Image (cartoon, rainbow, N blue to C red):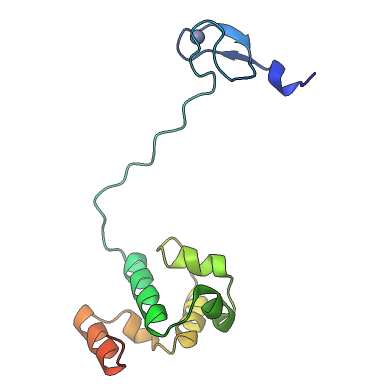
Length: 129
Ligand SMILES: [Zn+2]
């Protein structure tokens, strides 16, 4: 007998205490016995943060240079997972890694943080747009 299925749990709908069922539904009301998943984190309007801005620029330059994520990962000596997280603006990156990353892209670090018009001029000069 599975011990895990003998866990006593209270139905969130009708409050009946019971052993966990195979179907994970209440014996009485067939409501879900497992607690509902936590609500998604509240998200405000998308704000342009430094990491979002950086993420979108890094992704743009990578594509312009025709590097795939694995190719860039190898050049920058980071994991591909890291690049994917980074390009979603979800990474806390050290300056050292960022520098290596930018170098792998042949992208001067200051351009990454330059005001938008300057960044776009850079792309144009590089023939990237
Ligand atoms: Zn119930």
